Image (tube, rainbow, N blue to C red):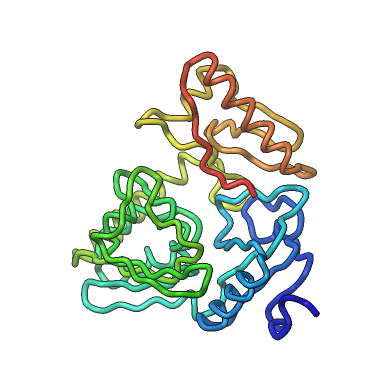
Length: 292
């Protein structure tokens, strides 16, 4: 008898995970599920708990690098409408953890609410943005977060209010397995001014990145306000290439994936950069990618 008996309609085995990430790399998930409701997700997680099945949640996949050997246990993808809904009530926007951050940013500007427009162009989902406290041009998602609803491994739901949440540079106190939704308290602003600001920031961001599409991604956090790209260039590693992975000529803190690349290529490239920057400049670069 399979551990996921009764969940055959949402659980698949040996699902290729590369298609769910920006890098399009890596092996398969031993088990993969796309639940249709919060209750179904809770039941599935309780079953995992009963059978000691490890699980992970994958969102937009912009910060995830999948091992070439694949991932043991269950990978959950929260793509169903129940996890992606958004709503507006006065100065508040509520968004599901699976909602695309870009959609929430556009929604906020469309209803003349300011605060999130600085995050235009930041990839991924609301859940991923909250967990890593996504920031851009001096603004972070954490400063606008009023509450967050999460789910534990046992399927229990908890809601944290602002006083219970902690956000710092590219980090948060949210270590719960699943972020179900968040409520943001924003500020009413002039719609034309907001639109102009968002468009300007989008153009600036595009000009600083090798590509706004999948197949490339940022590697390191900027240490204490210093540009990681500049540090990499200082040690002469601009355009470093390992197998099918190469540092972008446009921005040395981005890796570009070429045909035939493997996850191990990216891992080795990251290690080479970390080691050289540490040995020559004494700076310990922190990788922003989650390597599964």
